[in-house]
Length: 127
Image 1 (cartoon, helix red, strand yellow):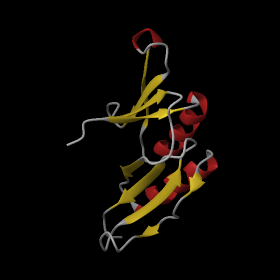
Image 2 (cartoon, helix red, strand yellow; image 1 turned 90 degrees about the horizontal axis):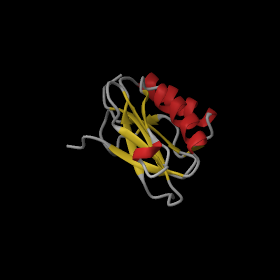
Image 3 (cartoon, helix red, strand yellow; image 1 turned 30 degrees about the vertical axis):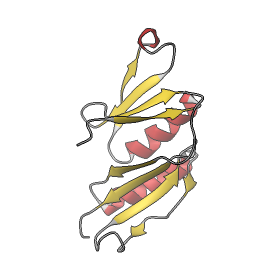
């Protein structure tokens, strides 16, 4: 249903370093930076696998309360996402592991990004 989405970030360089590492562990990368003449002077960048689907926009209006879950192809990718996100300045919000209260094979990990967003990687496949 969702074609693409995005979040506001307060510090583009810090956000880029975090998402390069965290999403890179899932195989995604920065695919596009929109020229500032089209964004009102703000830094806007899109991440994805084949096309940009997760956008970061420079903004003073950030804050906690947002949750974004990214699909991982394996439990090892979830583990790698968590480790990379923490190494890039994220804060732990739930170590990698099964969450059977969602379903029997729900394996996820949660981190807060530098702006306080709850970011997750999840694999729904059995081991």
